Length: 147
Image: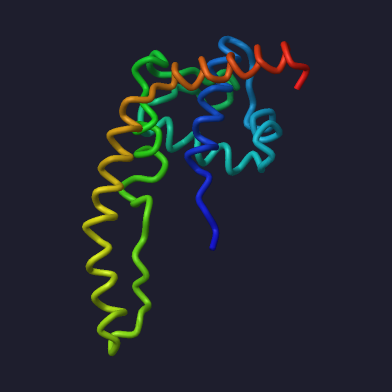
């Protein structure tokens, strides 16, 4: 089973853009930091641009945030890259002849819906600014401890 890392990549890109404000920043340079390919970065940046989270001009490697970091929530970023895709997924390939296989999935759905709502409420309360602050705290801690 493969997990989506689009949200992590999108946050990484947004923080990189914030930290590089006014400096040239190509998709190649961002891809090197994420350890992925530039096409993946360009695809995510396109999604972020369509969600009005970043601004950029084709041919000019100077992307910028479209809003202040305090006004961009983790939920905004999640919705931009994942859309309405839920965090948890039911197994839709259970045996239709098995009462447990059918009914356990239906019983799980309401719990999954609650987890989704709780997660989205939590993500709405986390701003890009909070993440940037956490980044700076990690840098400071690593400088103090040498790790």
